[in-house]
Image (tube, rainbow, N blue to C red; front, side):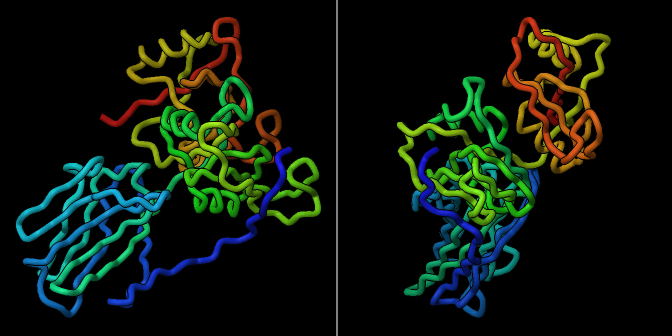
Length: 327
Protein backbone atom coordinates (compact mmCIF):
# COMPACT_ATOMS: atom_id res chain seq x y z
CA UNK A 1 0.00 0.00 0.00
CA UNK A 2 1.21 3.49 -0.83
CA UNK A 3 2.40 5.35 2.30
CA UNK A 4 -0.21 7.48 3.97
CA UNK A 5 0.93 11.09 3.96
CA UNK A 6 -1.92 12.74 5.80
CA UNK A 7 -5.50 12.36 6.91
CA UNK A 8 -8.21 14.99 6.72
CA UNK A 9 -10.81 14.73 9.48
CA UNK A 10 -12.68 17.94 8.83
CA UNK A 11 -12.89 20.84 6.44
CA UNK A 12 -12.72 24.39 7.64
CA UNK A 13 -15.17 26.92 6.31
CA UNK A 14 -13.22 29.53 4.45
CA UNK A 15 -14.89 32.90 4.14
CA UNK A 16 -13.70 35.37 1.59
CA UNK A 17 -14.04 39.00 2.63
CA UNK A 18 -13.04 41.67 0.17
CA UNK A 19 -11.17 44.60 1.68
CA UNK A 20 -13.13 47.05 -0.46
CA UNK A 21 -16.73 45.96 0.14
CA UNK A 22 -16.54 43.68 3.23
CA UNK A 23 -18.95 41.20 1.60
CA UNK A 24 -18.54 37.51 2.52
CA UNK A 25 -18.32 34.88 -0.18
CA UNK A 26 -21.78 33.60 -1.08
CA UNK A 27 -22.77 30.02 -1.92
CA UNK A 28 -25.49 29.29 -4.47
CA UNK A 29 -26.97 25.84 -5.07
CA UNK A 30 -28.55 24.54 -8.28
CA UNK A 31 -29.56 21.49 -10.30
CA UNK A 32 -28.49 20.62 -13.83
CA UNK A 33 -30.74 22.22 -16.42
CA UNK A 34 -31.67 25.10 -14.09
CA UNK A 35 -31.22 28.78 -14.78
CA UNK A 36 -29.41 30.22 -11.75
CA UNK A 37 -28.23 33.67 -10.63
CA UNK A 38 -24.91 34.59 -9.02
CA UNK A 39 -25.44 37.90 -7.16
CA UNK A 40 -23.17 40.91 -7.52
CA UNK A 41 -24.18 44.51 -6.73
CA UNK A 42 -22.46 47.88 -6.70
CA UNK A 43 -24.16 48.91 -3.47
CA UNK A 44 -24.37 52.60 -2.58
CA UNK A 45 -22.18 53.80 -5.44
CA UNK A 46 -22.59 55.17 -8.94
CA UNK A 47 -24.61 53.21 -11.46
CA UNK A 48 -23.10 50.51 -13.68
CA UNK A 49 -23.10 52.42 -16.96
CA UNK A 50 -19.51 53.18 -17.93
CA UNK A 51 -18.07 50.68 -15.47
CA UNK A 52 -16.15 47.59 -16.54
CA UNK A 53 -17.72 44.37 -15.24
CA UNK A 54 -15.85 41.08 -15.53
CA UNK A 55 -17.00 37.64 -14.40
CA UNK A 56 -14.43 34.84 -14.31
CA UNK A 57 -14.43 31.23 -13.09
CA UNK A 58 -11.52 30.23 -10.85
CA UNK A 59 -9.94 26.90 -11.76
CA UNK A 60 -8.12 24.56 -9.37
CA UNK A 61 -4.73 25.40 -10.89
CA UNK A 62 -5.31 29.09 -9.99
CA UNK A 63 -6.06 30.11 -13.58
CA UNK A 64 -9.12 32.20 -14.39
CA UNK A 65 -11.56 31.42 -17.22
CA UNK A 66 -13.36 34.41 -18.70
CA UNK A 67 -17.14 34.11 -18.47
CA UNK A 68 -18.47 37.54 -19.54
CA UNK A 69 -17.04 41.04 -19.87
CA UNK A 70 -19.29 44.11 -20.02
CA UNK A 71 -18.49 47.75 -20.79
CA UNK A 72 -21.68 49.75 -21.12
CA UNK A 73 -23.68 48.34 -24.01
CA UNK A 74 -20.78 46.16 -25.17
CA UNK A 75 -20.80 42.60 -23.80
CA UNK A 76 -18.90 39.45 -24.71
CA UNK A 77 -19.23 35.87 -23.45
CA UNK A 78 -16.56 33.19 -23.68
CA UNK A 79 -15.91 29.46 -24.15
CA UNK A 80 -18.46 27.06 -22.71
CA UNK A 81 -20.48 30.07 -21.49
CA UNK A 82 -21.01 31.46 -24.99
CA UNK A 83 -24.70 32.36 -25.47
CA UNK A 84 -25.46 30.73 -22.09
CA UNK A 85 -24.84 33.60 -19.66
CA UNK A 86 -25.97 37.21 -19.35
CA UNK A 87 -26.08 40.02 -16.78
CA UNK A 88 -29.43 40.43 -15.02
CA UNK A 89 -29.15 44.25 -14.78
CA UNK A 90 -32.29 44.53 -12.64
CA UNK A 91 -31.29 48.11 -11.76
CA UNK A 92 -28.40 50.53 -12.27
CA UNK A 93 -26.38 48.86 -9.48
CA UNK A 94 -26.84 45.23 -10.56
CA UNK A 95 -24.07 43.05 -12.05
CA UNK A 96 -25.73 39.72 -11.19
CA UNK A 97 -24.75 36.86 -13.51
CA UNK A 98 -27.39 34.51 -14.93
CA UNK A 99 -26.22 31.05 -16.09
CA UNK A 100 -28.77 29.14 -18.16
CA UNK A 101 -29.01 25.37 -18.67
CA UNK A 102 -26.74 24.64 -15.70
CA UNK A 103 -24.22 21.88 -16.43
CA UNK A 104 -22.33 19.54 -14.10
CA UNK A 105 -19.08 21.23 -15.17
CA UNK A 106 -20.31 24.67 -14.04
CA UNK A 107 -19.72 24.11 -10.31
CA UNK A 108 -16.90 26.07 -8.70
CA UNK A 109 -15.98 29.59 -7.61
CA UNK A 110 -16.85 32.65 -9.69
CA UNK A 111 -15.39 36.13 -9.32
CA UNK A 112 -17.28 39.33 -10.09
CA UNK A 113 -14.96 42.29 -10.62
CA UNK A 114 -16.35 45.81 -10.98
CA UNK A 115 -13.93 48.54 -11.97
CA UNK A 116 -15.49 51.87 -10.98
CA UNK A 117 -13.02 54.64 -11.67
CA UNK A 118 -10.05 54.01 -9.40
CA UNK A 119 -11.94 51.44 -7.31
CA UNK A 120 -11.74 47.71 -7.97
CA UNK A 121 -14.56 45.82 -6.21
CA UNK A 122 -14.36 42.02 -6.10
CA UNK A 123 -17.06 39.58 -4.97
CA UNK A 124 -16.69 35.79 -5.07
CA UNK A 125 -19.57 33.32 -5.32
CA UNK A 126 -19.42 29.54 -4.87
CA UNK A 127 -21.71 27.58 -7.17
CA UNK A 128 -22.61 24.11 -5.92
CA UNK A 129 -24.42 21.71 -8.25
CA UNK A 130 -26.42 19.04 -6.40
CA UNK A 131 -25.27 15.55 -7.33
CA UNK A 132 -23.58 12.35 -6.24
CA UNK A 133 -19.97 11.15 -5.98
CA UNK A 134 -19.15 7.62 -7.10
CA UNK A 135 -15.89 5.63 -7.30
CA UNK A 136 -14.87 4.20 -10.66
CA UNK A 137 -12.29 1.73 -11.89
CA UNK A 138 -12.17 0.46 -15.49
CA UNK A 139 -12.49 -3.02 -16.95
CA UNK A 140 -8.71 -3.45 -16.57
CA UNK A 141 -9.11 -3.34 -12.79
CA UNK A 142 -8.08 -1.03 -9.97
CA UNK A 143 -5.28 1.51 -10.23
CA UNK A 144 -5.08 1.75 -14.02
CA UNK A 145 -5.93 5.43 -14.60
CA UNK A 146 -3.59 8.39 -14.79
CA UNK A 147 -5.18 11.79 -14.18
CA UNK A 148 -5.95 12.42 -17.86
CA UNK A 149 -7.52 8.96 -18.24
CA UNK A 150 -9.58 9.70 -15.12
CA UNK A 151 -10.93 12.93 -16.61
CA UNK A 152 -11.89 11.15 -19.83
CA UNK A 153 -13.53 8.18 -18.14
CA UNK A 154 -15.67 10.38 -15.90
CA UNK A 155 -16.84 12.33 -18.96
CA UNK A 156 -17.75 9.03 -20.62
CA UNK A 157 -20.01 8.27 -17.63
CA UNK A 158 -21.81 11.66 -17.87
CA UNK A 159 -19.77 13.00 -14.96
CA UNK A 160 -16.65 14.99 -14.04
CA UNK A 161 -13.77 14.29 -11.67
CA UNK A 162 -14.99 15.13 -8.16
CA UNK A 163 -13.57 17.93 -6.02
CA UNK A 164 -12.28 17.57 -2.47
CA UNK A 165 -15.38 19.35 -1.16
CA UNK A 166 -17.66 16.94 -3.04
CA UNK A 167 -15.81 13.88 -1.76
CA UNK A 168 -15.82 15.31 1.75
CA UNK A 169 -19.59 15.80 1.52
CA UNK A 170 -20.03 12.23 0.29
CA UNK A 171 -17.92 10.96 3.20
CA UNK A 172 -20.06 12.97 5.63
CA UNK A 173 -23.06 11.20 4.09
CA UNK A 174 -21.55 7.76 4.67
CA UNK A 175 -19.36 6.98 1.65
CA UNK A 176 -16.75 4.38 2.64
CA UNK A 177 -14.34 3.22 -0.06
CA UNK A 178 -10.95 1.60 0.35
CA UNK A 179 -9.50 2.27 -3.13
CA UNK A 180 -7.63 5.55 -3.65
CA UNK A 181 -8.89 7.78 -6.46
CA UNK A 182 -8.03 10.98 -8.28
CA UNK A 183 -9.72 14.29 -7.40
CA UNK A 184 -9.84 17.29 -9.72
CA UNK A 185 -6.99 19.11 -7.93
CA UNK A 186 -4.56 16.29 -8.78
CA UNK A 187 -4.57 14.81 -5.28
CA UNK A 188 -5.39 11.16 -4.59
CA UNK A 189 -7.66 10.38 -1.65
CA UNK A 190 -10.28 7.94 -0.36
CA UNK A 191 -13.07 8.15 2.25
CA UNK A 192 -13.23 5.87 5.29
CA UNK A 193 -16.17 5.89 7.70
CA UNK A 194 -15.33 2.48 9.25
CA UNK A 195 -11.57 2.43 10.05
CA UNK A 196 -9.92 -0.96 9.51
CA UNK A 197 -6.42 -2.32 9.13
CA UNK A 198 -6.62 -2.91 5.38
CA UNK A 199 -7.69 0.69 4.71
CA UNK A 200 -5.08 2.93 6.29
CA UNK A 201 -5.11 1.37 9.75
CA UNK A 202 -7.73 0.44 12.29
CA UNK A 203 -6.40 2.86 14.92
CA UNK A 204 -6.70 5.96 12.74
CA UNK A 205 -9.91 7.97 12.97
CA UNK A 206 -12.46 8.04 10.17
CA UNK A 207 -11.82 10.66 7.49
CA UNK A 208 -10.35 11.23 4.06
CA UNK A 209 -7.07 9.37 3.59
CA UNK A 210 -4.83 11.59 1.49
CA UNK A 211 -1.86 10.51 -0.66
CA UNK A 212 -1.21 14.12 -1.67
CA UNK A 213 -0.59 15.38 -5.20
CA UNK A 214 0.57 12.72 -7.63
CA UNK A 215 2.19 12.86 -11.07
CA UNK A 216 -0.72 13.37 -13.48
CA UNK A 217 0.78 11.28 -16.27
CA UNK A 218 2.84 8.60 -14.52
CA UNK A 219 0.80 7.82 -11.39
CA UNK A 220 -2.16 5.44 -11.65
CA UNK A 221 -5.16 5.13 -9.39
CA UNK A 222 -8.93 4.87 -9.57
CA UNK A 223 -11.09 8.02 -9.74
CA UNK A 224 -13.97 9.61 -7.88
CA UNK A 225 -16.50 11.02 -10.33
CA UNK A 226 -19.28 13.51 -9.69
CA UNK A 227 -22.57 13.52 -11.57
CA UNK A 228 -25.58 15.75 -11.14
CA UNK A 229 -29.32 15.31 -11.65
CA UNK A 230 -30.74 13.52 -14.66
CA UNK A 231 -31.94 15.45 -17.69
CA UNK A 232 -33.96 12.55 -18.95
CA UNK A 233 -35.59 9.26 -17.93
CA UNK A 234 -33.61 6.37 -16.47
CA UNK A 235 -35.36 2.98 -16.42
CA UNK A 236 -35.00 -0.80 -16.48
CA UNK A 237 -36.26 -2.15 -19.79
CA UNK A 238 -38.61 -5.10 -19.36
CA UNK A 239 -37.71 -7.83 -21.86
CA UNK A 240 -38.99 -11.41 -22.32
CA UNK A 241 -35.44 -12.78 -22.01
CA UNK A 242 -31.97 -11.76 -20.87
CA UNK A 243 -29.60 -10.12 -23.32
CA UNK A 244 -25.97 -10.03 -24.41
CA UNK A 245 -24.32 -6.61 -24.35
CA UNK A 246 -24.98 -5.97 -28.05
CA UNK A 247 -28.56 -7.12 -27.61
CA UNK A 248 -28.95 -4.72 -24.68
CA UNK A 249 -27.68 -1.77 -26.73
CA UNK A 250 -30.09 -2.66 -29.56
CA UNK A 251 -33.04 -3.11 -27.18
CA UNK A 252 -32.63 0.39 -25.74
CA UNK A 253 -32.26 1.84 -29.23
CA UNK A 254 -35.42 0.08 -30.39
CA UNK A 255 -37.19 1.61 -27.39
CA UNK A 256 -36.19 5.11 -28.49
CA UNK A 257 -33.44 5.40 -25.86
CA UNK A 258 -29.73 4.70 -25.31
CA UNK A 259 -28.07 2.27 -22.95
CA UNK A 260 -27.56 4.07 -19.62
CA UNK A 261 -24.19 5.19 -18.26
CA UNK A 262 -22.77 4.68 -14.79
CA UNK A 263 -23.44 8.33 -13.95
CA UNK A 264 -27.11 7.83 -14.83
CA UNK A 265 -27.61 4.89 -12.50
CA UNK A 266 -25.92 6.67 -9.58
CA UNK A 267 -27.95 9.87 -10.13
CA UNK A 268 -31.21 7.91 -10.34
CA UNK A 269 -30.33 5.90 -7.23
CA UNK A 270 -29.09 8.73 -5.01
CA UNK A 271 -31.19 11.67 -6.14
CA UNK A 272 -34.45 9.93 -7.13
CA UNK A 273 -34.40 6.89 -4.85
CA UNK A 274 -34.51 4.48 -7.80
CA UNK A 275 -34.68 0.87 -6.58
CA UNK A 276 -34.49 -2.25 -8.75
CA UNK A 277 -33.22 -5.71 -7.81
CA UNK A 278 -32.41 -6.70 -11.40
CA UNK A 279 -28.82 -6.72 -12.67
CA UNK A 280 -28.51 -4.89 -15.97
CA UNK A 281 -25.95 -3.88 -18.58
CA UNK A 282 -24.62 -0.32 -18.71
CA UNK A 283 -22.81 1.48 -21.52
CA UNK A 284 -19.30 0.81 -20.19
CA UNK A 285 -19.92 -2.96 -20.31
CA UNK A 286 -20.43 -3.27 -16.57
CA UNK A 287 -23.44 -4.87 -14.90
CA UNK A 288 -24.98 -3.14 -11.88
CA UNK A 289 -28.27 -2.61 -10.06
CA UNK A 290 -29.50 0.16 -7.69
CA UNK A 291 -30.94 -0.58 -4.25
CA UNK A 292 -32.35 2.25 -2.15
CA UNK A 293 -34.35 -0.09 0.15
CA UNK A 294 -31.98 -2.76 1.55
CA UNK A 295 -33.51 -6.24 1.69
CA UNK A 296 -32.63 -9.90 1.58
CA UNK A 297 -31.19 -11.21 -1.72
CA UNK A 298 -30.72 -7.68 -3.10
CA UNK A 299 -28.54 -5.62 -0.75
CA UNK A 300 -29.31 -6.78 2.78
CA UNK A 301 -27.20 -4.34 4.79
CA UNK A 302 -27.07 -1.01 2.94
CA UNK A 303 -28.46 1.13 0.16
CA UNK A 304 -25.99 0.96 -2.73
CA UNK A 305 -25.43 0.59 -6.44
CA UNK A 306 -24.38 -3.05 -6.57
CA UNK A 307 -21.56 -3.92 -8.95
CA UNK A 308 -21.56 -7.36 -10.61
CA UNK A 309 -18.45 -6.74 -12.69
CA UNK A 310 -17.50 -6.59 -16.37
CA UNK A 311 -18.86 -9.90 -17.73
CA UNK A 312 -18.13 -11.38 -21.14
CA UNK A 313 -20.23 -9.23 -23.49
CA UNK A 314 -21.15 -12.08 -25.80
CA UNK A 315 -21.53 -15.02 -23.43
CA UNK A 316 -23.22 -13.49 -20.36
CA UNK A 317 -26.88 -12.51 -20.39
CA UNK A 318 -28.51 -9.83 -18.22
CA UNK A 319 -31.21 -7.20 -18.32
CA UNK A 320 -30.47 -3.62 -19.36
CA UNK A 321 -30.89 -0.10 -17.99
CA UNK A 322 -31.83 2.54 -20.57
CA UNK A 323 -31.73 6.32 -20.61
CA UNK A 324 -33.98 8.55 -22.67
CA UNK A 325 -32.70 12.16 -22.82
CA UNK A 326 -35.17 14.99 -22.57
CA UNK A 327 -36.41 16.12 -25.94
